[in-house]
Image 1 (cartoon, rainbow, N blue to C red):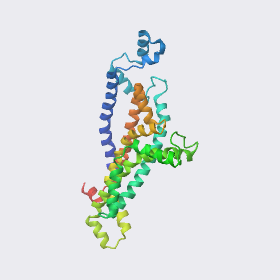
Image 2: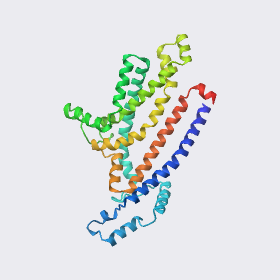
Image 3: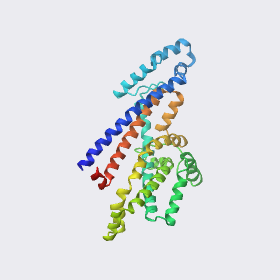
Image 4: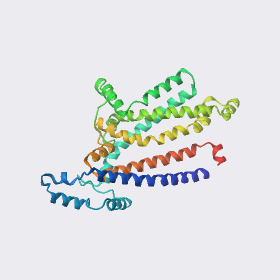
Length: 323
């Protein structure tokens, strides 16, 4: 336990060392792209009074007439104090806008992860214990086909099937969980399914690969000779050591899910975090774009730290003792 705790702290430290320069580069590139585009909110904010003097006045008020590096450093200082800035267009705090939208996207992503993990584990286990048989080949073909389907194609197919033909689920909108839990689930289940297919397929493939390798290990043969039941061998001895590749694959899915949320939220007309980022980018609302970027990096960082800690716990005892 002390070993695992030490490795967990080292994992967190190593992840932070990697993410900090990535975060600085990503935010700086966003600033540079905004400057290179030549877009300014001053003209649209001026409305019918868009005279050169009025535009210059607004740009000065927003600080857009200062050097780019100075603006970037000022933004970084504000960020370190917990201030994400103010939207150029509606003058709301960026943190408030993100907080209102993030709940919707978090709901979709969490349900998608639960569905993807559950389906991936079931399919991976079934394929591994039936290695080389019809079940294994069928599951492998199925997950290979599913992984090629883009979320927007699945979303449209689900709307046609479940909303238009069967009339089982509403096709768009969002209701908070605390207001109506049943309607909340009906509204997020289709976008969650659309996002869950790729993680489910990847987890199933990686879990099958890890379990097939683990089930051929000598200690598994020894457990069989000692008369352990197949269920105990699979779930107690093999699953822990064979699930590492699947857990590692899961850690790479959060960025894909956040990116896919932009598409699914647009199709299902859900005013979530992804749609906020896309709309803000189209308007050139740099403070909101940077705020969504910061939150995305934090989410990816936290989830990857948790996944890396999980991998440390799942790491076979023989490898831990060797280190």
